[in-house]
Image 1 (tube, rainbow, N blue to C red):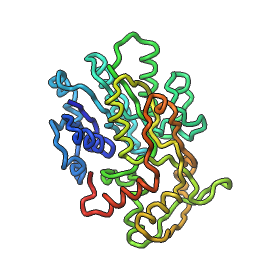
Image 2: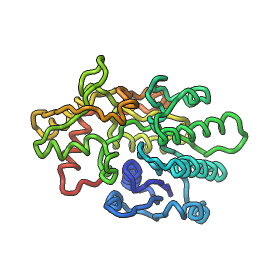
Image 3: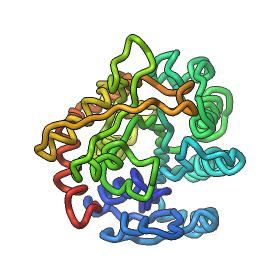
Image 4: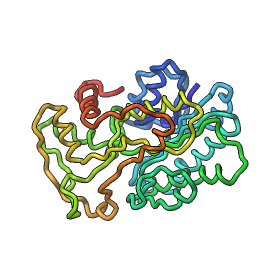
Length: 328
């Protein structure tokens, strides 16, 4: 059995769906609260659902059956202000799962984040060494918590004689978009947030640039379609000898203007873009460029091409956002 933490969330539910489509037995750990998050997993055949509070006891009871933990559960909001909660969920829980997998010979794939790179002043190389990780300066508590665990793992591997998981992989996700992100509100991808606006014939708004060397809408991100993220996770499960900390982007930065044009192309409409000032509150830490260095994952043997921005947006709009049932 494979346990997916955060399995009702955006990336987690897509991974759970990919596993279920393979016929793998899947259990998830998550909490639902109000709203429609449950719809992310409504179509899946699941072995069990466990709350985070009951996870430790559940793992002990199901230890013989659990082969792998895919740990996607986290507080992912970059604006969350309760740092104690962020540390408890993003660091302490991750450490517990590492130790549980290590002591029982299980496999662990966990979510790190491109937010660990901060402003990108040291580049976007997924060097997992202690020295390289120590140079990174995340800009928010979310990114710092992910960095905290990456550094703990690196130190554990380099300086202790403790057992390690049978397979361990950390994935530094870049700008992921795709179905089942609708519960994330303001943390949804730009595609999900702007599609209803563009579909209604209203202008697609983007931030103006406040740098002379970057045009309005020319700010760039490494946008990756969630189906590619699922494909990488499934590939890792098929290659249990691959271990390490890896970026997960496409390796090709694209501008927000490119993204807007892709949405309008999917709608078969001419682009209609307006520009607004970047809010003063986020302007000092606003990133103008992110691009994953993908050499390490490629070097580990992953050779499949990543979905282009145009193809990914077309698929997302055509198969999900424009349909009565938007869920995978």
